[in-house]
Amino acid sequence: MKNKVWIALVLLGVFSCDSIEDKKGRFLLKGNEKMEENDPKSAIEFYQEAIELDSLYTDAYYNKALAHLSLNQLSEAIEDLSKAIQLRPDYEEAIFQRGLCYLDNGEFYKAREDGDRLLSLNPELWKSHFLSGLVQEKLKNLDSALSHFQKARELKPDNSDLWVNEATILFYQKRFEEAKNLLLEAEQLNANESNIYNLRSMILFEEKDYGSALEQVEKAIELDNRQAYFYNNKGLYLLFTDRLEEGLSLINQSIQMDPKNPFALRNKGIYYVLKGDKVSALQYLNEISQDYPDMELVQEYLQKALSL
Image (cartoon, rainbow, N blue to C red):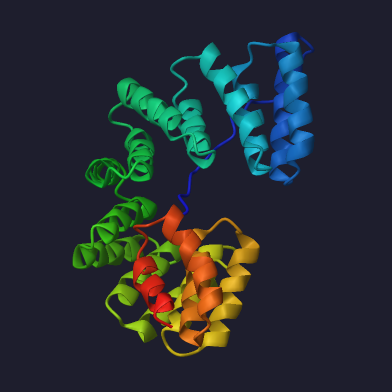
């Protein structure tokens, strides 16, 4: 699941005189204005100007990190966040954002350290448990992840995404009815959250209700057409409703959007099994089986490919 995070730039009022404090504040404000104009490159330049005036300016490092994040420059963002945390060891928002960056960068154990740090600083902050839940999910500690997501949701019950994250863990544990109940609650809070419908479609697919699964993932795509895994899921469901070429087209579209998604490569292997193309099917499924032997459907369709 893609996990939404609410990030806010540190704001500062306009100053009337020309001290160092005033100048750096104006640069921070100009950077914020550029972020509002969706111009993070210019924003970075203004934040850097503020830092050159005051190398201990934690808010400028933090805002600069967010600008780098908007450009998907994870290493640069981590560097700036680390500087902000070094200057202000209890900077909760910077620790939270750095933990998320580490997760996106595949540095799960460093992310776990930031999760533990947040929990130590503020165990009643929902973001402390949210970050720790994401880390435990990546480390395949599903019971621990579920516990953290439950706590985060209790602390922030109006946040629909927390309900979806909890439901996702229940889905992994094949506790489908519990997951569906949580998704109903999430939908009451925010009916425009696309991940609600995508996850519901995945549950319906597991229950072999392919038509309803298609309806739900189509709703997810209507709400957010930028997510590669929505198209991949729809492509898979089409394969199971004998619409093979439509399914392949969407799976290929998903791969173009995210070439690293192993589920899309698995689905191409399933397509070739259903087409009776043993050579092409094994090309995909053998590789996925080696790298992700426990992935759903992989072993089943690898055996079917070998039997062609």
